[in-house]
Length: 202
Image (cartoon, rainbow, N blue to C red; front, side, top):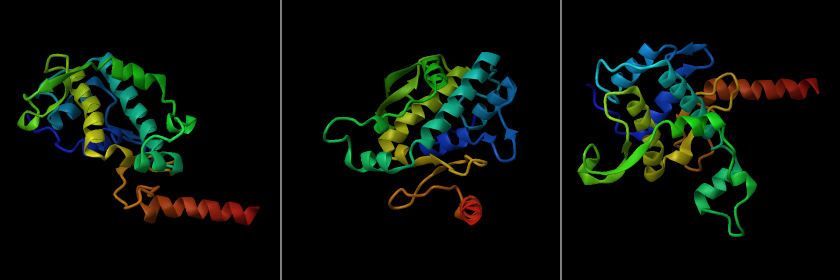
C-alpha cells in the first residue's frame, strides 16, 4: 500500500480536483474508481472495495470542500484569518453557510481522537472511527485532513479558482493571500479579458 500523503493541504486539493470541471473529467464516477483512488494515496489497503453509498458520500464531501474553499476569497475572510474573531462579536459574513450535503457527508465519516498509532511521534489527532480497510475509513482520513490543515495553518490558504469554468483547487502561497486564480496566465487573463469586453460593450 502506498504511503498516505503527509501534506493535508495537498491531499485536500488532490481530492477536490478529482473533478476537472473545465474538461468535464471525473475520476470518481464508480465505486471501483473511488476505491482505486483511495488506495493509490495510501488511504486504504489495496483491494479495498467501495459501495454506491460511499461514492455518494465522497461526491458530497468533494463538492462541499470545493464550496468551503471558495469562501476563502474576499476581505472578510482575509481579516479574520489575520486578526482572529471580530472585536465586537461575529459578523454574518464570517460564518458562511455550506451545503447541507457537506454536513451529511462529514456526519457519515465519524472520527475519534488518537494518541500515537498512525500519528507521527505520538502526536494526538483525529483518525477514522470505522475499522480500516473500508472506503468510509479512507474518506474519514480526508475529513481528518481538514483539521490537520487547520493545525498546519494552510486551511485559510486553500482556495478554488474564481474563473467559473475552472474552479480548480489550489494552495495560495502568496504573501498576502490575495491569489484569485489557479493560473494568472490562463484563468486570470480569461477573467480580465471578459471584464474588458463587458466594459467596452457598456
